[in-house]
Length: 214
Image 1 (cartoon, one colour):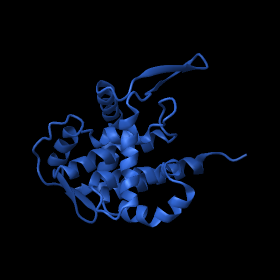
Image 2 (cartoon, rainbow, N blue to C red):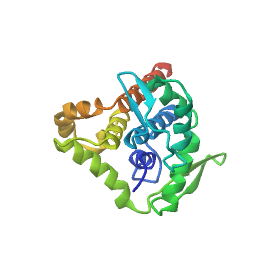
Image 3 (tube, rainbow, N blue to C red):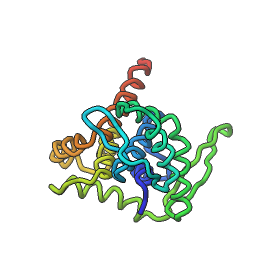
């Protein structure tokens, strides 16, 4: 079974070429932070009240992508969910590298380096096993099309897809309109996902506001 950080990476990966959806780096980091905290929530290590995230069980999960955050929560006073999302986002690059390394090790993705303008290099992650990549998206859409209770990890993925505009590719315009109420309802269920989505939207607005107009 894939971890939620890994599933988030697959959700954000474009089908063509192995690049990620276009989004500010800060938004990617917030998405990873939300995935880490939601997986700890799903593992009954942390919980939330109306504003705060707090420790339930400090027993390590055995996952090196999650346990450093769990240890920090165990050693800290109760803090707002927003605080922990922003805090975990500070080391999201390391977590992202670990998640991508796992996906490559499992034969789901491969890694290649691309050069452009002779001076710049970027890494891409083409899919080796397209079925695994598509399964994450199919599951998200299936949750929306049903009236069934959504698991925390699926709520997080729906929040992420909604905040990053991914549903524009997964659903037709007519179906987006029909499912919009369901999307908002599911996305509101978990404070971690809702807060992460709000942070991502705020980053996007800040980028738009700072872009000079001609």
